[in-house]
Image (cartoon, rainbow, N blue to C red; front, side, top):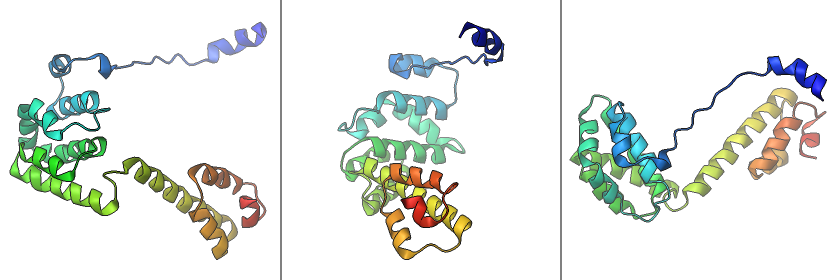
Length: 191
């Protein structure tokens, strides 16, 4: 109603939102920004790698080879490069060997680092099923939180309830976690 709007309008925060549309930027525009090598490399990967699932990672490394080599030589550059190569590995659905070969273009130690990332992805089954791995991780984290809340509120939890929580979906776990606040016992949380 207009009367409520007149009263509440001065209380509304004046928030401005700045959207940096990377999709509209070219490589040259991103490189011209007065940013660090780490920021520039990150922006380029965010802009051009997303949606390029089946591209050879060497294509991206060759495109920005000078930039990535300069980043590698910086004091904190190797840590940043590890994060960038991890992102690259998550976004591209290619054999791990291609990923390792692409990192070798930057530096021999980068090849070793990317081989470690690739080995980790193989061991965890992440490379082909990254999205499923992320979802499973979320469910596991929410299950642990829900169990912790139940233990804090009610003490011990029956093994059957714990098993049911560990097998639940993310959505179900969110509902149950909220019920912990008002339920009389663990069984009522899952009702």
